[in-house]
Length: 37
Image 1 (cartoon, rainbow, N blue to C red):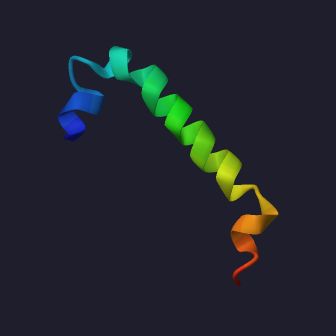
Image 2: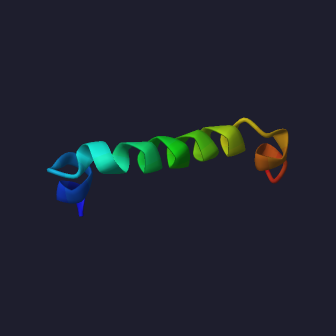
C-alpha cells in the first residue's frame, strides 16, 4: 500500500494525497470537530 504512495507512482498520487490531507486539516480546524469533548 505504501509502495504506491512512495514508489513509482508517487508523483501521480501526490495531488490526491495533498487534496486528502487538505480536507483532513480543514476538518480538524472546525470547532464542530471539538464540540463532542
